[in-house]
Length: 259
Image 1 (cartoon, rainbow, N blue to C red):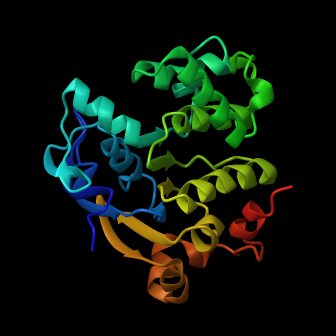
Image 2: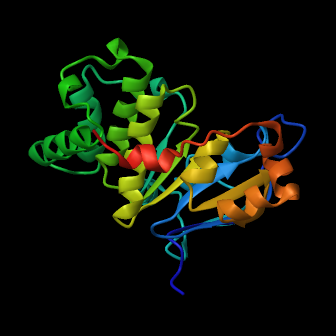
């Protein structure tokens, strides 16, 4: 079997001043075409794990690997990694900063060495994929919350990464915007990329993901197809599925019925 695109190997990390570690031996492999729902209670380490995926945090123990090789943390190595591993924050205001959406989307490609013409081309392609072409001349602060999220996602896609790490990006979206975001993530995986989506949304985990990775107390304790989690009383309880009535509608079906 070929090496995973991205691998977290026994990561340990404690934030300065924290009483307990955020990660204590977390391991996860991300392979081409996978859609992984990263689940777990608040404080279980999901966001911290994602922040290690493109080098925003450096493990105090353990290794992050890209295509089997340990990643480097000098400027050029991180620039290369971040062109392949894109991170979308839950709060898009943490990513949007330019005067217009077009400038924001073009920033990443320009910063990685693309010409202005190529950067604009990639920005326009990403905007079309996220259905925000009509917003390119708008200032990001004037967008709605859902539009900001799509702009942040488009900014990451403009870099043409293989792996997308998304931190609860569907949380709080209306059904139409959530369908659009899940459809974009579906398309990325269908083209050979991978997605790791941190989520508390059980219907997304059940119907959208190809795998669920459950985190508890800083470790990934189980990785399996959604069916295994939702048919086992033990695993249902540990992801909180026994506390909720799941909808019959499937995000996968709604995401694929583009209108």
